[in-house]
Length: 407
Ligand SMILES: [Zn+2]
Ligand SMILES: [Zn+2]
Image (cartoon, rainbow, N blue to C red; front, top):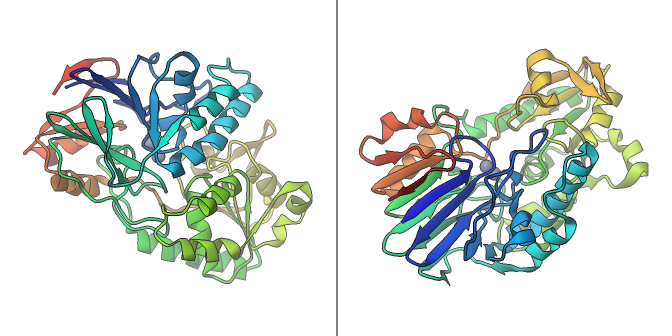
């Protein structure tokens, strides 16, 4: 089997993996690095089938390019397919606002969505010489590991999480000959999730009891809904604003992908969804606001922080990875952010809670041992080599973008 990364091998972002055996070529993911300007994978190559692991833009953000110039059958779970349409349309809006050249258009996004072939976990499909089976990756609802069976079996994880969260059960290893696995957290373990959640609730309570408000700058997909579930048990007034509401609607109307749809629904019904300017003006009557963008580079979060910036009793609680150059990273490192071009130093408290949906180092190693492959291919990481010492019983490959190799 021949494998070539068109992106995402030695970096977190723009994942694009081409695999070829006998007469069949497939592509797994075709993402973007949403920097300024965005970084795309190498140009699309003709394949028979496109398989998407999940809706995050570092995996899906360049997919419509395929539907502009090429044709391929496109496989995804219904949850993933439903989620990518608003996210891709939003990315087009942002690109237009920032003045970047358009590499695909709104019609391509619609074509992509309309052509998807729905796949269910555990149910194999045939694509040329491959029999392909999707399994839950535990990362966000709808996220998928794809197992390709031909003369050998290859498991491609996409982003992976192995612990239980409010939304999902963790991913379970699937025995395979070859494993292509993400390695975002190579060399780093997470603090115990239960402890993080307890500390987070405690801190929210302290801030609200002291008369302050808590702002959660939050990613739209997965994290918004998980925070709503975590906080809904506290008896507080919780507002949710931004793109997260659109994704929540999709979760509400795409059953079969959540650990407990009943718990999810009852948590969401306890939150106040902020829609439109009128509601936004009064939104800070809530104790807590969960709102995009997750790295504070745009979206309603900046309005809320601007309104509260002089209030020492209020707090900004970050819960996701903050990319270098973003407002979120600047807040963590210097205590400053930019609002409408002006540098602001909020008097608000700020704190980081690690609710990552990526497996930490030890979980990655345990997962690899569970798959028990002959060959491990590490990708989607900047410190992949830190896993090698723990994988001495396997052949380990650290591919680079653009090089083709045979396994
Ligand atoms: Zn992801
Ligand atoms: Zn990713």
